Length: 286
Image (cartoon, rainbow, N blue to C red; front, side):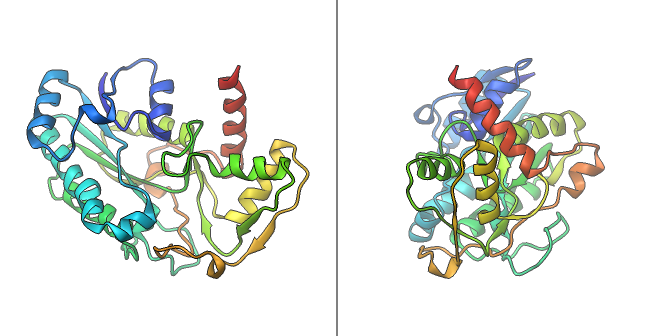
């Protein structure tokens, strides 16, 4: 399969390039494909002639999206629409990545694909708008919602992964404070890349959740990461009310992979995601 991968240098894109070894992957650098330019997108698709386009690019600095909502919508909604339309016109399969932040978090159970989004931030609203723009085309497209993605390549926004920060601070004897009242489904990018590859094979187009299995607070996730890393250190649980940020976050945004599992595609548990990440980090450092 010939794949045009957009955002190939990010956490998920890096895992796709590493794992999809039987596919021919073309991953143009960030400055080579302007997602605000219809002509450039069309020229790229016509030149590459891909079977599949996977869009991992996004403006995902949640707090900056709150300050720059027009840019958020340009990159997370309008650009996604451009790509989806260009793919539909060429009968090319399209995959784009969305987020748990399309939900309000006012629940006490993992969200399924049947739940109605109610975003509470500019980021979540822009991503939901992108979902709707893809859905209206009724083309050969997958929208994949995920949650708390971490990978071997550090976050472009933060410069590190959550696990690496927690482990590094513990080893340095620095205090670790992690929110205990925010629940999510943190997902290892390697597991997500594998699930998307399997999903593409089904040709069962539509909206899917794809996350490591099991809701967990960020505090419990951090404690398990330290345990698996073999670091004996304590973490101080704190309330999200003491975490001063520009954008509101969902209090509970764990996702259930109901439709994915109905296709026979099962994601590993969140504990197994941590183990795979730590194992792959060691392997990539050799």
